[in-house]
Length: 237
Image 1 (tube, rainbow, N blue to C red):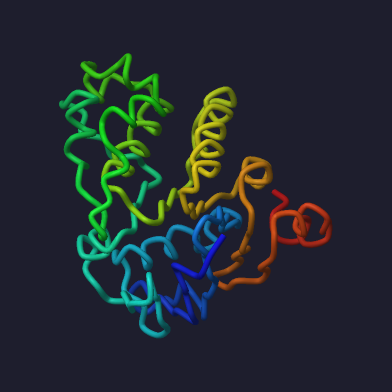
Image 2 (cartoon, helix red, strand yellow):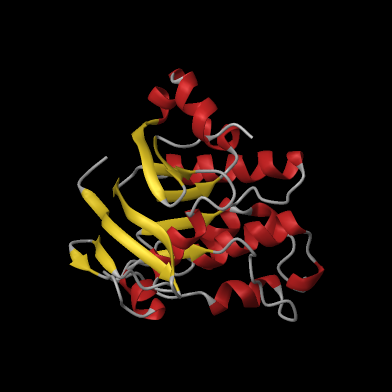
């Protein structure tokens, strides 16, 4: 673990006249896996959109690697080192798996070139066996793995995954969990948005819970596991 790489302070986000986020704030340190947990509609995806520049905060600050990025354009934020895996995956269906990976390839903000095609195939052996398949002919779980791998090809310093377990069969969710655990153990800094608390309990190191657009709890994942009242109040379906 190390110093903070992503600091979110008091951001308010509106869609038109409707306020969605109210003073949201949390910190991600290098090497951490932070789970942003909350029920459907709590504000998780809007928070991610604010971090990646798809929703502009009206108030508050977002600092990444010491520089303020609130209001910056999404491609500038990506170049700065934030990788974003959206909830709906968004593969290029008429391109092969390998083409999808190469589309995302770039060096990191400090010239990092850790995630190359050979390393991706080493960490994602399933993709190595499917490199010539059209992405549109992959299953949902396979597309999720491809999207994560494609984002890593951009050598980000922080990887954000929005609802990585959403809509997938339990066996595929377990495979995605194993992959995230592997990335965590490799030292990748991860921020997960999830409503599936049980999916995150064995993966995350820290958590922030969002409810009705506000952060209502921040602590280690071990503390959350022991806090039955908080889990029942904010995360029980």
